[in-house]
Length: 144
Image (cartoon, rainbow, N blue to C red; front, side, top):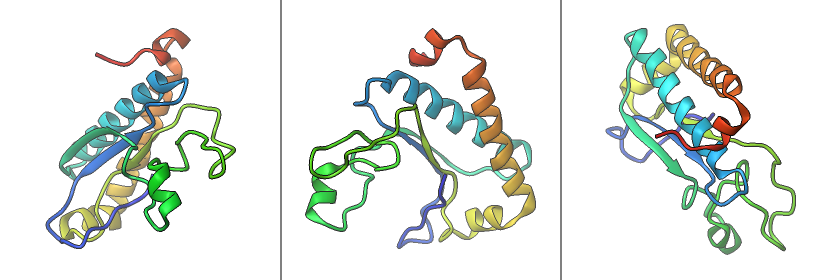
């Protein structure tokens, strides 16, 4: 999880990223869907909703500091290996949620509140519990 920022204060919302090229891409997608759904549901229950920007692959969301970063095109934390650039990717399914934009006043007030922080934490915990309560074959298959 990390909180996002934009050059525009109008940009807000939550999105979750996953890697679609790893051998366990279906598990990544399922986890990402659970994370996005459960965090937004908890925020809404506490009256602290934000926009749902959806679940997306990590392509194009990686660092663009160097030409090598741009050529890799993934998030290192969940992305695949690439010879000469990244040799030790995680060996487990993963997803990364950007639940709020700190540069948006409404989202920032949620992030700054104990209620908002607890909602995000509870949503993440619920998503992980739901992911691990699924049979292994269900974890690998994308949700419909």
